[in-house]
Image (cartoon, rainbow, N blue to C red; front, side, top):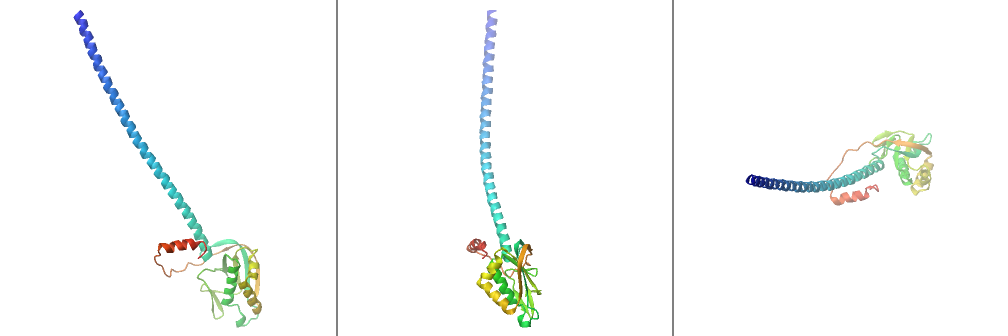
Length: 235
């Protein structure tokens, strides 16, 4: 009986030792897996942080590009208005011009007279202008063919109606007080032109026809920067 009891105690001790070894091995394995998982999680968190920084950088670039795009769009609108190649709307004045009744050929309103009036209006603060529905643009000009007046190579007939966008409160006074305006009034009075200026309210002027491309070349960076600096001043 003593021998049997001793044998049982020995077997139990061996079994307990084996179970303890197995438990230790399982525990070590779990700890190793936890450490590996933690290491993998740290690497993923590092990748996530880098991607977040990249997203923030891309978002900042997108915001900068969006701001530049809006600025360029605004600049394009201003240039289109100034050059005549974009429709515009705003307050201004209306001018009706015609030759004196029973005028001879030498007393009729000619291209040079219309040019002088247009230049006087620009100097008085006009922002955009049309004559008989045709928009004045940077490449357009008045020209006589016989007694017929052409604007942008299209015929216009008297009476000549100028729609001028600008400050209606200051345009007429500026036209009268400027040196070039004085020349216009002197010419108008000497030839007896019928000339009427009134508030035109809010007007919409059409865009001029698109010109054909005459010449193009590759510009250098210095030219681009110069044009960018001078663009908003209309040069």
